[in-house]
Length: 306
Length: 306
Image 1 (cartoon, chains in turn brown, orange):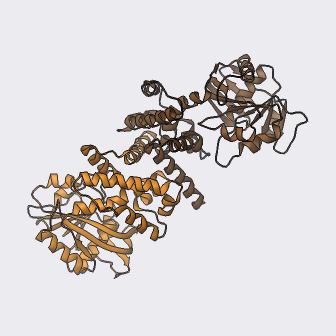
Image 2 (cartoon, chains in turn yellow, red; image 1 turned 90 degrees about the vertical axis):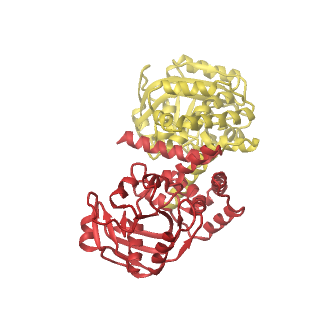
Image 3 (cartoon, chains in turn brown, cyan; image 1 turned 60 degrees about the horizontal axis):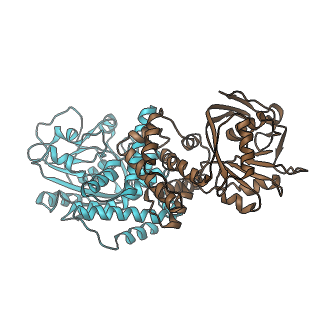
């Protein structure tokens, strides 16, 4: 199989598939030389997951034979055409597996490869890239997955079995879109809010005067959009999310870390697509719209200032 | 008269009163030595407004005779007790004049000096402090003023005549609170939004996708709160504000400049008090609440990180 995008997430799940005995190639850009020479070094509670990929490619190369699976682990960003990135590696029978964050992030890929099976995965993991080719896996690793837009195909079960053989937990879901909404209930309020609050951590967000009330209202907006999109959530979903967050120590989410480190942020995948779906269904999301517009303005101003 | 707070605003209006022939003293903190030695240097389209105050005081000094007027030009910030700052200079018959931004910023002063006449002024001016004791007046200067909470007392007319004698335009208003709401219609959306958008200018805010729509919705929230507070605005107020802003070149408002320069921001005066009044009247202001909470979280996180 071919991993497209080998940041922290791609490198980690590549290691898992390698442990399962798969032939794992990676397509890289900036880290091509380092990884080709030294492979990936991965520290993990699962043990030393370091590995040398079976092949290291870069853009522009072609394969004689298309792989059974292409696994896409690139960030979902406005300037990144994932269809074009995947194109060279996807053959007629290649299954495409997305391990990516966000809502409605499958469509752009499905539009380019309408005949290929598309398997959508959500990663629940704490992993970071500390330097080129070097990954630190701190905790978790479960994938929730299903065939897009719904169901669990045999292809999906097959790749799930490989991940499990590599040592991680898999949750198969008949509705991966519903799973994405469930994750969005947390991410869509907390991630952008943290950025607007200058990189605030979870405890700051909940404990600031008016903070928890605002997060709850934002969550209610997400629940309303999800319901309009055909994915109603249980009544206690918000209470459970807040309670779960309060049980964890203060931490900065991935978007906050991207923001503080000057990296591009998945604004559309996490927030913009939710607002767009709300608008399609006529659901009022004033708080989410406020965040989306403020973050969009930030990008426009940064482009002007540079 | 005694000017308390001689930043850009206080120094400028002190110069105007000096030109009108008034005895003008100033109370300073950090710039005491510079101003005592060299006075204020003020470049202005009105001419060279540089002046040496008749006296320069600092906290802790006392006067033998209380002044007729104390003019308060300090920023309205959570940690700043303006009542305490004014106390040493206010006698039984002293009129208190506020030249300050924001909504409901008079109450904290009136509570400390319930028997003193209180005159509330809004400055429409472009002025900045370039270094200690040195002020650049770029344009405008009009004051809109009235007795607080309403009416135009003889005291108010008297100080207005002095400002006019010094060369600026005065608009007397029977309802200075209504005037504050009218200014709030612009400031309350644009100022905090600019900060959340990383210091975005007016054109960025209006031209970003969804930007003008958001600003209009926020203005509608302000209009609703003002109406609930007894100050309905004309139906075309929002259209006029947007059109007026579109006629101006792109610029960064005062809060954006404070943010970009790491100076404290008048969040409560401009935004927090509007949200508080909305809550008292049960008016929904989801967009303003989102901004207020995000900015409050920013302060909490900054305090944690330092």
